[in-house]
Length: 228
Image (cartoon, rainbow, N blue to C red; front, side, top):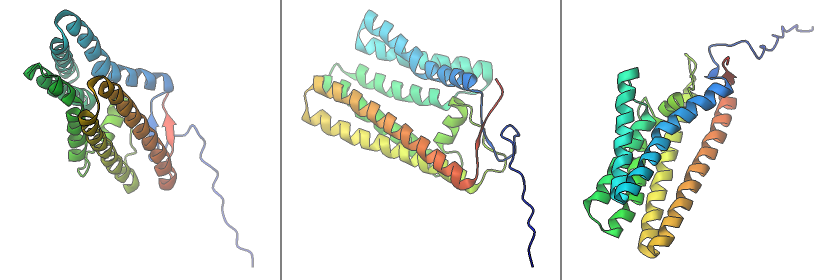
């Protein structure tokens, strides 16, 4: 006796379903990400450059912190909310500015780098076990990622775990920079700070993307790009 099975045709690539993970069209995605990065990194860097040229290191750090909170205020007035990346940038820059302005000590100036990484570790770790892990919030704001209405447990677990991953990356960076601060001269420390920061962010981003792809496959999800 032969059993007859009904084979369902594959879903066309352009037909959205509730289980899709949605991203905006590539051009709009680049614009959204670029705008968020400009607000949280580009504008403070510009303010720092102007402030440090006019009044030195302390003035530059203060100008960068003021620029972030000014941008956050404008965002709140215009949209009713402040992006998480902007808040993180504001908190870290404010902490760094306080350390720099507290004294003219070179040690305290250099201490801002491991302390900033420790602060980021705490911020990520605090949200990791909650229902709103920070990586999920940043994915929504920075790249406009839209999760499916009936998201599988694996997707929520992914965001919690990756938030812990970033907390761990910043913790390792903080410890590593603290050790370097005690072991090498200031010029070498500043160079290694850049290397550690870039390596940590690049490595974390790569792991996050690879983990995201693996999670999509395991959960049977796919990424769908919106219309331009």
